[in-house]
Image 1 (cartoon, one colour):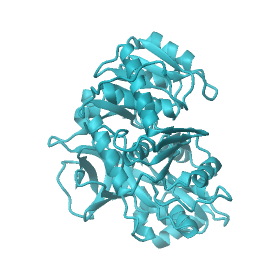
Image 2 (cartoon, one colour; image 1 turned 60 degrees about the horizontal axis):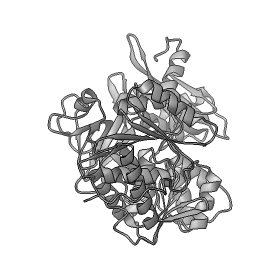
Image 3 (cartoon, one colour; image 1 turned 30 degrees about the vertical axis):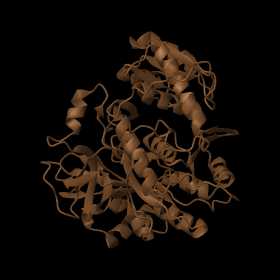
Image 4 (cartoon, helix red, strand yellow; image 1 turned 180 degrees about the vertical axis):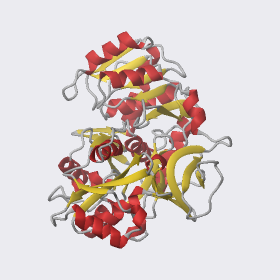
Length: 508
């Protein structure tokens, strides 16, 4: 069996640090086998589905490994979700069991779960976990058999849902195990290492770094609710060596105060807030850690590709990278006809390998549309190849066609951000009848005041005329949403704001 991540190392090694509680690998393995017996008693068999609406903790991982043992499919549900969102996930997954916390923050998960049971038509059991930071179901004997197979669907991750209802990208047990080991190897994780897991397990980046740590024998430090000072304190207290998160998370931790981050050795991030180069420079100058960009998504795992930590700061900050395994292949194609494109020419990034999802759960139409006739996964991302690596440019749907030219908004954003009066920039396109796409820029001002007129003049001097935004508007902050992998800028909201500034009807 490929999925023996808890059986391969010493049972005495620490698996989890959670607050003041510590759980060894052996204790987590036994607890997971007890949970397998519990799920079997509820009637779950291979192919059945259990939804887990829990904060990060021992119980979440206990149920995950229990599902792997009996061949069941685990459906993580975001603890940020409320009734209707969770109902959509449970109904889509056709879950038979839903596990919820008795108490967490200020939401009645038990009451919501019972409403979901009444409405779903499939859900049979609502299970209340009395806690989530220590194992449950101690009264059950460890389940004696390993019934899971590498080909079993084991875990799903939600797509963003920015253009409709979220879908559930389903991955196999064998693919998860293989990726966990590969991430551990490429990240240099060892049994003596400690990984700060500050992103939620229901998100693909939080999940991947956690299972990679367990696959490598390293210890996980769980932080169910991210706070920068708490994260910095945990790095110092547990001598954390590995920490993966968003650029905004890194920026907050690096600025958290008088904490030592000297043990931090490896880290990588998806850039959501435009702070990539800043955190790279700050981390290296202050602590000698060489942060890099990464690439991933729910359908193909986080940490699918990484930048070389030995590269210079500019190279390390570029999104994308080299696939972490020779078993992961990529190509860049013309999105109109899937014809391969040469190096440095932008097109759609397509992927193939063990890391790609088996499909969208219970959604064969979306699954069929996501793959080419010859089996490549369509990421929907604009990228270009550079030797054995690729550089992520943006979402294809976010590209602008300005006066006939295809333009990546990041080109304009990066140029504007070089102005001393601009802290960061976001550019969106608005379709104007008879004219096509029109670029509108939103900027956050720095301590050096600058006017729209001055920024437009700056653009006229430095970039091609067709790239110059129609308007450049200063805002206090960008509309954003906390996602499982960090804060994301809501481009759709910015497009609506841009339409309003041009006096057009809303685009949403």
